[in-house]
Length: 113
Length: 112
Image 1: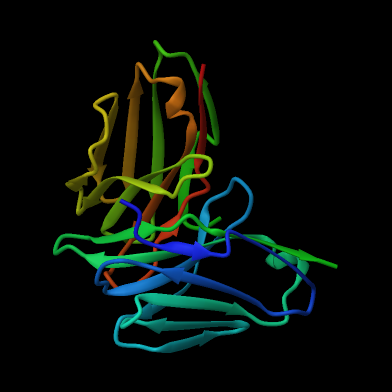
Image 2: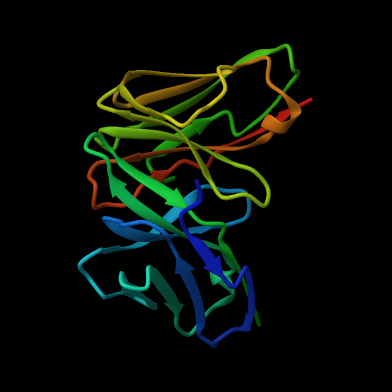
C-alpha cells in the first residue's frame, strides 16, 4: 500500500534556484529516506533521517521531518541542470526480520539553464 | 556501478516464455529485495529476503517466483506473464534497518 505522497508531482525551476519537495505519510516509521532516479534507471539513496531527528544536511540537501504532522521536506539549494531527475520519499520500518521501505509516487524535477 | 548488478538490462518475452532476472551484490548486505516500477505508480515491493530466507511476499502472483540461493544472489523467475507485467524490475540490498538501500539499474521487461 502506498505510504508516502510527494508534492508537487512536477517542479520546474531555473539553475541556481532552490527546489523544495514535500512528502506526507500515514503510519509510524523508523526512518524516512529520499532517493533520486534518473530516467529509467535505478534509484540512488540521497539521505536518511531517523524518526527521532528533525533536520539533517548533506551537501546541498536539507531534509526536515515532522513526525507529529507525518511529513518531510527535501530542499535542494543552488540547483544545477544535473539535478534534473525524479525524487522519491520512502518510509522505513523494521519488521523484525528486515527493513521495509514503502515509496511514494515521486516529484519530477526539471532544472533549466 | 552501485555494487548491485542486475541482468539483463532489457528483456522482451512472449506470454508463454520462461525467463529469469538475476541480481547480484557483493556489498556484504544481508537483505535483498525485488521491486516493480510501473508507469505512473509508486514502486511496489514484491519480495524481501533476509539472510536468504523469504520474509515477505507482497501478494505477488505465482507467475513470479523468487529464488535466493545465498545472501549475494537473488533471482526472479518469470513464466506465463501478462502484458500488464511489463515494467522496470528493480533489485535492492541493505544491511541495517537504519541505512539506505542500494539499488541496481533495473531490468526493463516488456511482455508481448
